[in-house]
Amino acid sequence: MTKSMQNLLGQKEFWIFLFVLGWMLLNWPLIELANGYVVLGMPAILIYVASIWLFFILALYLFDRGNYD
Image (cartoon, rainbow, N blue to C red; front, top):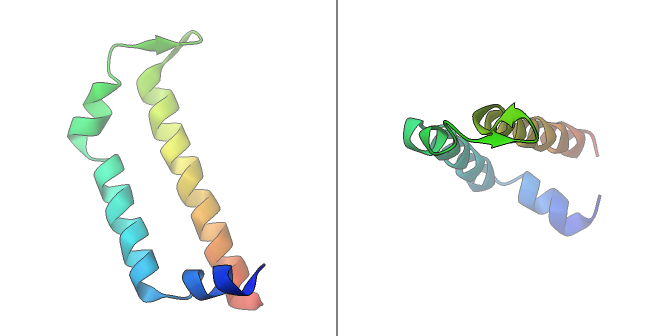
């Protein structure tokens, strides 16, 4: 991982930003926007929540990987 990415992942403010971003993305009004729509035969709300969940799994992976380098 590049040095600048390690510096970014090590900053406390970056993780606070990710927490607030996740809190906003999984908040009721934004989840409600996807309610009632169907994408590729699946409910859009399922795709929305799964994509946000996968984003946070990736962010946690990067955080964990940054701690070992």
